Length: 101
Image 1 (tube, rainbow, N blue to C red):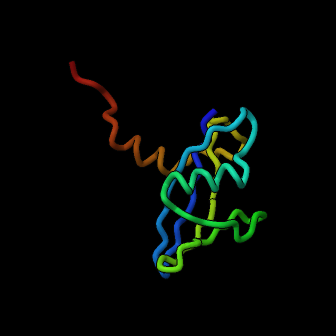
Image 2 (tube, rainbow, N blue to C red; image 1 turned 45 degrees about the vertical axis):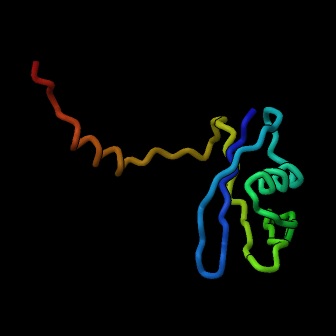
């Protein structure tokens, strides 16, 4: 099963939101080693900075950056979904009430 990894690449003051993909067993999250392999495949050479917070730092002396994993998306439904009623209300104003033939 594919897991989309949402992470931030931080270089100085610039924060770039990025994503990567890791194959995992259903119901599991990627391990730190799987994340390291994913970053390596993206030419991001890092070591683990804090495994509990899923932060990584570069090993390249010329290019200092850190990576912070934000979330994992396996496509499974979770209970933290909340419908955005304000957005739904705004969108409904753009949809015609009747469709002329």
